[in-house]
Image: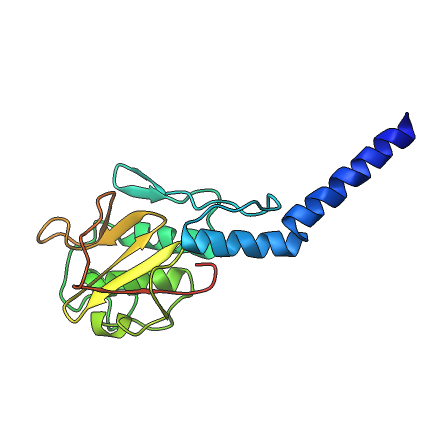
Length: 185
């Protein structure tokens, strides 16, 4: 009886290997599928992107988020509700108020994605072209904001107010350039 069970287990493992490929192939398949939004069979090591939660204005990263993404969210939370100040956050990451790109720079600094503050025009060529899996910065010559784990971090939700989180996303076609850190982010 044991030999029959062992043979069946071996046959099942061989069938799965032939169907799915090696674990590294399955992981690569998962990575490409998640980038395209498609579905794939994987080894189980691939976790789908989950959205961050927004509770009373504070964002909470999903457990499946990479550590650097969690840091971006934590740093953005540190300056949410700071006052809006044109040019704020450009001379130094630490400031009493922030404008749009200053707040994006501060949050991205938390995840070690930028080493110095940038203006919105700088984000038009930063990182990789296109949307990221976890982080996408949208910019044009006059404004910058970002989507992190499905939440928008922006200064334009309420006129006169500084940086904050929102579940509502902006309409961006043709008006903003989408950039991301690249890689798994």
